[in-house]
Image 1 (cartoon, rainbow, N blue to C red):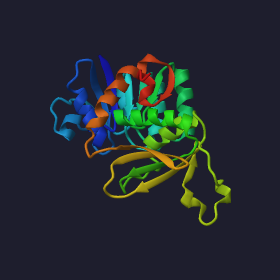
Image 2: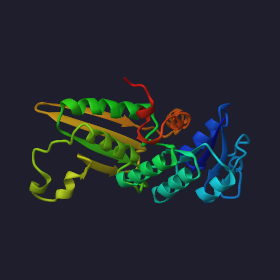
Image 3: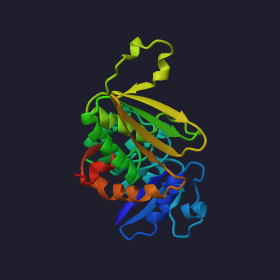
Image 4: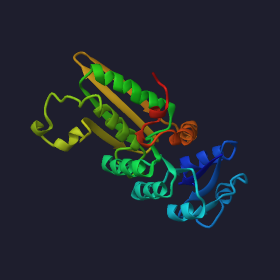
Length: 267
């Protein structure tokens, strides 16, 4: 039985994962973290009698009260890193679903996971279609040297770009940096309109009503282009199966891995 602490268990995606865990025989929720609903049971908050674990205001409080095997981080980027480091200190493996953490943050998490002899799995997006977007884009980047990434999200999303796109740019950087016909420093006009240079890719973030999370990579060659795109719907259900897979596999390695495909056989 895998004991899980779910930080962000009352949120849009976290609540869907919580409900799924409550139906399983191989894992159980021992605690949840939500500053707004601290002191209640998760079932009272979500209207699900199967969720009997307590909700705590902070990760530290939850970890101290109930030891867990896997800490699932699904909160906000301003507290996510400290939550993860605290969980590793308490001897838990960690799944990171919160977006907005930087490469420097992940370097610190990687070091902490190695020191704790625990696994940390960072997943920008748990949907299978995103896993395939990343894989197909890596293949395309081997053959097409020029691309740009478009990041779409709703107008209320504060972090930019999304964790999905951060992870994608990081993965493409391991293939090669994208080529620019006109170097950024030679751009005439407003250079910022060319987007931000992240891990060797040009990234453009759009924040408008009507989007949930979408990511698109556009590859270009003379007289031809290739567009690879993922679009999320309004439901959190596409992320549940990937989240459960992450919980089940994060204890199988030591250190940091990024991307759900790092624990999948996609060869």
